[in-house]
Length: 188
Image (cartoon, rainbow, N blue to C red):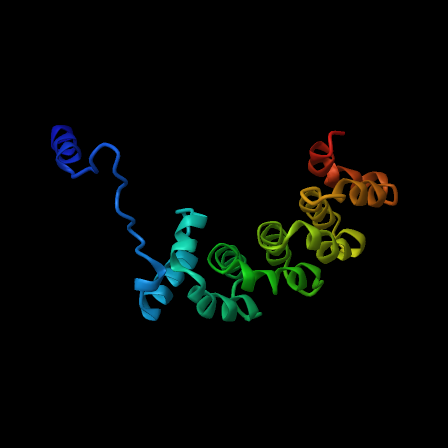
């Protein structure tokens, strides 16, 4: 049985040396709206298969029409909404930039949605805007773990370490552990 599998692997066509394998995703322009919706929903429904940023990016900016309603649906599973944020950041970063800061700051959102928004902000927002959008989370989020994630993301922006250090001075001893990753990024 194993010899059959090995034979099948050797028989599979491969690109010639120096050539790239054709993209399985296809160009975003060549995908119909229905195909984009089908793939996006398939990616969102994936349980044990990670979906790469490249797969989301291959859907193109038109994927936003599928992902934004899911992100805004408070009745949808929070994990599905978080995956939709990840997808939107990769497929339509300019659209994601309009949402991630607001979602990260909203105390009524589930933590998993806010964490996805924080990580998405790092990829979708310019460095200059990152601190302005996320400093309210760093300063006033009720959950110290969420403040720690915000701190880590903010360290990627110019001047971020100074903002994190200033906040850390006001944190209690019990909450300081949430800042470990941010402090490592700042060289402490």
